[in-house]
Image 1 (tube, rainbow, N blue to C red):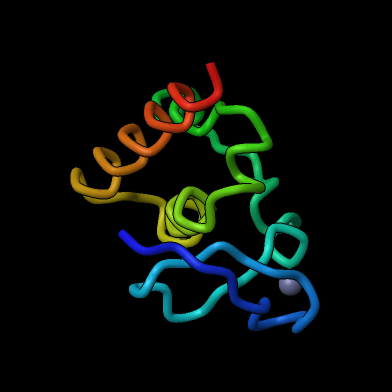
Image 2 (cartoon, rainbow, N blue to C red; image 1 turned 45 degrees about the vertical axis):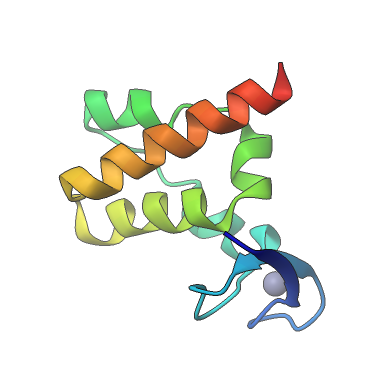
Length: 94
Ligand SMILES: [Zn+2]
């Protein structure tokens, strides 16, 4: 997938790494407060417990977590994608 940078939709200041499928690029700074909500579900909490830099780098991971915070659930596909992206990021970091 082609990745490129676009200015944040909200602050119009920071650059966000996006793909052609991204509709609204929003930077980490603008989503930070919404992201730091305590997740009560133990299973989900464990899944979201990844290095903060992953959230900084990936709009996708941020949007999945925000989706969960907003709606209290995720589809099997979203969970699968989240884990897949985290695995890939872990691989490139090590
Ligand atoms: Zn922003």
